[in-house]
Length: 478
Image (cartoon, rainbow, N blue to C red; front, side, top):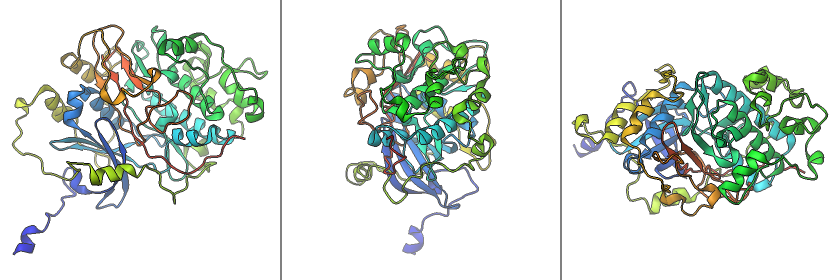
């Protein structure tokens, strides 16, 4: 009788997805509001990355709307070059997002170890990220935080874009106006506050390409102000040995240092001449650039092209300290729990009510992808925008969450310059949480140049993110 009494209940795989459907494996990341674990679906045996986000923490940090925004955007996206959402659900304590598992680590980790990657490797990653941006922009989504930390490699070496915490929908009718993203990768039109569209992602891709090639970014500054001025005004400079490291076509892609003066470039302050932008032919013009002359884009889109680097699957791709913390320090370890069947939503706080109603379950095996975006001319999701009024905090002083206080000035989240309100946000990825010097070294954190947002949604994202360092080497620049 005792054995029968203690036998676990049979899992209902035909019912709504929940934590009971997964084996909890290794803890591989830690962030401001939760953690990342490898999980395995008990029925299909498929491996995924589980992001679990503590409800109490995001309510305290006023980040509920950011998380809901991210979850809804991810439900819409289905791209071979994005870390796609597979399941979403919640229990009484946490919000859960189950995503594609990337075992190859992020490009920040590889860049920090090597100081610069081989040109052929960089070209491959830039091409796949261009395809990712093409998929997003086609859906009217601008990422706004493209950087090495947010590019993850799968076990074969293909690149995938992640972290949609500050991504938003845009329309051609009205420009976005908020200052959002990681400052070192922000386009001039974002910092100039004159309004912008998806063109900002192509600038960020140019910064990423430069950093991957040379191990440092083209625009730098010791303060936010000096960095802003550098991005707005400084002429791009290349290392003295740039022509020995990178082909003329590769340099031309960035700023046109070759004889092909008629070509538009990624690091063009004039968006009418920026490579990839709609004014200059969009993604098709990008594909036609001479740097990619030997590329079969159809083969690349089908993921039939062989990546120039394959991560070493025999070596650990995450920091083992996360697992030790889980074993030794966690006073409330993650485990599947039954939900309270008697929850009265009307009696919940505004934040918890919003989570119950808006963080809806998702199962990619049963539900088609859909968009929650309702174009209203504002360029922002109406559901998120309408919820902000009850959660914003007025005042001119910046709100700097505790987990960012050790960061340098360049990395710190910035206050809403309009003094109309700031709201702390977060993004959980699959990387470690560390500070950065701003030169592309000494960090394996998704937030090496901290993400933030000011404006449309009256929010400020802290982007405390986590990681899975990997030990594979995608070719060091000679």
